[in-house]
Amino acid sequence: MKAIAYSIKPDEKEYLVRSNAKVHDLTLISNELNHTTLSYCIGKTVIIISGRDVLDRDLLRSLKQIGVKHIITRSKTTTHIDLVSASKLGIKVANNPSDDQSYESTAYQTIRNLHLWEAGRCVGRACCCQDCNERVSK
Image 1 (cartoon, rainbow, N blue to C red):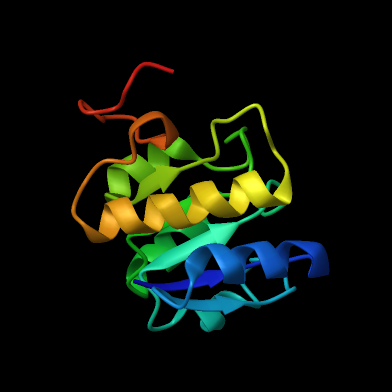
Image 2: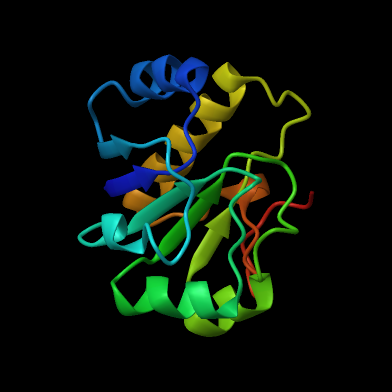
């Protein structure tokens, strides 16, 4: 999958690169996701964000218009994402549901989500889609 990860800290980079093992076309940038940096998403179907990147209805609409189909947040919480709007737009959302929020665990879960979506499968406990019938109980 073609993905871009925003708000990457230097310590996170190593874990994401190692977990990915050159499977997915992964771009890592330190910039936060906003309307100014939206153009970096062009050609990507997945965006990977931090808990500091706020995705409101307008930004989600813009993401949908440029072809983004999936969002992964590298946090357990999803309060920074308008999940109702994402659902209405048909954008799938996943998180890192583990209590272990270390960079290593988060990188592993992020790449696991990419693998499952690429295989056409639900991401299970990591699924944050409002209308998911496949999600394993959280």
